[in-house]
Length: 163
View 1 (cartoon, one colour):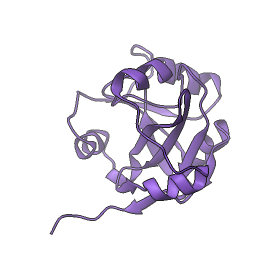
View 2 (cartoon, one colour; view 1 turned 135 degrees about the vertical axis):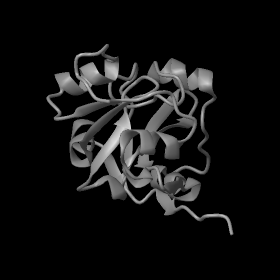
View 3 (cartoon, helix red, strand yellow; view 1 turned 90 degrees about the vertical axis):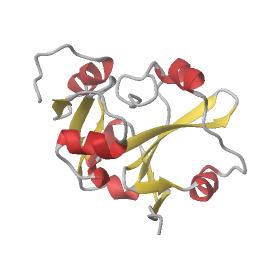
View 4 (cartoon, one colour; view 1 turned 180 degrees about the horizontal axis):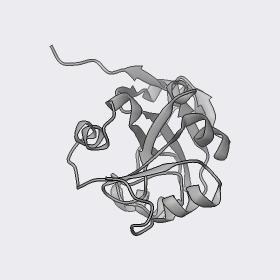
């Protein structure tokens, strides 16, 4: 499931160049976060969602949050001091990051965007996208925060399950 000798990605190369201790995990294509977590042998809370958020025309940020949490529009707007944010479409996200949806990561991104990390990443080992479908990087959340000088804040809510 993991080997460092298989084909690399810009994300893997960026983590290596930064000197970040990491493990590469490879698995088949998956259809959901839960499937990805199972394929990596981890809990959904340890699989990090990387979102690209448009703050204004031409201005974007990465938002990193655990897979078992829900993005809080209100908290992120308040943190950024704006009344309006949005998610770019798939084409715009690819133009900004160089990655297609489902593979987006700040590692090796085409643009070095500001990073906002949810407080739940601190002090934990996490799995973040490795820049290709079926590729993950297991890293210390604190190393990711440090590498990208991420702003750490409470930007998510506990996921509520349907009754």
